[in-house]
Image 1 (cartoon, helix red, strand yellow):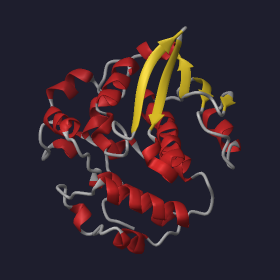
Image 2 (cartoon, rainbow, N blue to C red):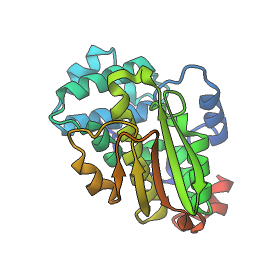
Image 3 (cartoon, rainbow, N blue to C red):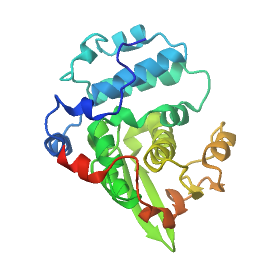
Length: 249
């Protein structure tokens, strides 16, 4: 198990960090997006909990486990994809993407997480999360882009994944879908009221898990991938953190 893999989400996490907007702007403006080492620490720790040999997986792609503890460590997109490809081959099942999305804590988003939970409403938190979605460096904002719209009193997250992802495309989409559910629960303090899920790929072998996770009608082989929910929750206040205090940090 990696040390410091479970990040505590508190104001202390940000005392020695560069200003939030500077970090987000720098990441967002980068042509080549690296993967946040804190996410890689969590990823390898999670894979280890599944019984995988993370030392071998990391070494196969030139990832130094000790070096990941350095906040300035760099993990390239290619290394990230290599880690996931190996994990996919070692995993006993077909639903690794869902498992990753469900178990990833919002704390691994670090300062972006703090900015989201300091928002006044869920609408504001969602807007912030989408604006800086490539902050985590986990496909989002480049090979996988999530957008939002409102359609007839329904909120809709649409996920567009590029074909360049190859064998990782389904894993990446499922990771994002499941993590939307998990992150929204962290932000709202309750489940996102999902009403419908459309997926632009055939039903996978683990399709039964979708009903358990999303608890709504699911349509496969749809033209696009869209997660719908009751839009009434968008203007619900977020009370976990006082916005005024967070904006003063």
